[in-house]
Length: 179
Ligand SMILES: [Zn+2]
Image 1: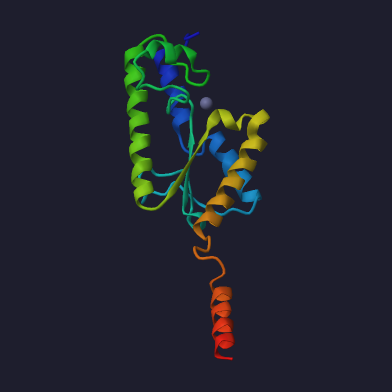
Image 2: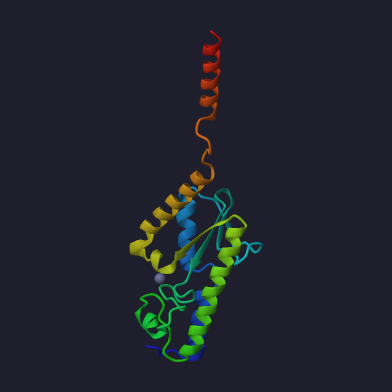
């Protein structure tokens, strides 16, 4: 464990952090092949979402489990416990205080950005790197597509059911009463 030199670690993490990382490509391809269209890395929106689907009013974030602290609740009191027990986010044993602070900041920023997006009327979906492992990939993409379709349907639901029919019924009634 933890045998990388600081430089190597920095390099690795820079690579993980960069855009066009593999998990993001998996999501793009998966959605594209299912007919969804999107924009990438929208600079205009808070948090620069990885994918923006205007038609669905939805932003998708593809999050690395390490950087965004998947399965780690850093707001917990017993930090040691949650850190040791996350399967996704293994915080290095050296410089632990630094990493915890860093990931905690990232999490706080994620929450803040998604809150702002929600206030602007956007739905936000987070897809985690670990959910895109080959064994889980198809299931994740399927459920993502399902969620998007559900969002669209909910947003376009007719608020008042069959207004036309009710109108027609009213007219029929009025006609009957006139008789
Ligand atoms: Zn994860």
